Image (cartoon, rainbow, N blue to C red; front, side):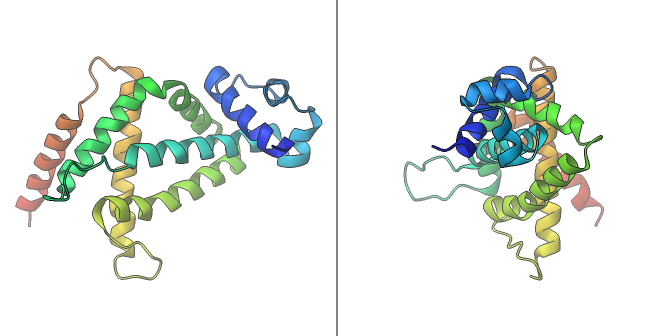
Length: 198
C-alpha cells in the first residue's frame, strides 16, 4: 500500500477515533505512518483528505444499510414497504455499531458552512445518491434525460431526508427516537392524507 492509500486509511481511523473537528494533520500522518508532507502532496490539504475519507466512509455505510437482506426463498418477493422497513432497521442498528462514523459525519456537515470545497463535495455526493436510492429501493430509473428522472430525484430526496433525520434523532435522543415500524406507519398515514386530497 502506498502513502496515498495509507493516508486515506489513517484519515478514516482518525475520523472515527477523534472526529472531524479534532483531527490534525499530525494525527493523520501518525495513523498512516507517513511523512506529514505527503498529505499536501497527495490530497492538497488536510481538509481535502478528511472530506474524501468521510465521503468514502459514508458511501460504504450507505451501501451497507441499503443492502437487501438475504431472502430465505425466492417467493414471495418483499414489498417496497418491507424493503424500506428493513433498511430503516439497519440504519437504527448502525447507530450503535457505526456511531463514531455518524458523529464524525455530522461534524463534517457543519464545515460546509465555511468551506465551499466541503459544500461542493457533499452536494455532489447527495446529487449522485438521489437517483441511486430511487433505483435501488423503487426500481425508478433516474438516468439523466429519462422520463422518470424528476420522479427519481424527488423520491431519492425524500429518502435522503428520512435517513438524515432518523440518524440525527438516534444520535441525539435514542430513548425517544422512532423505530422502523413507527416510520413506516407514519409514512403510510401521510400517504393516505395526501391521497385523500386528490
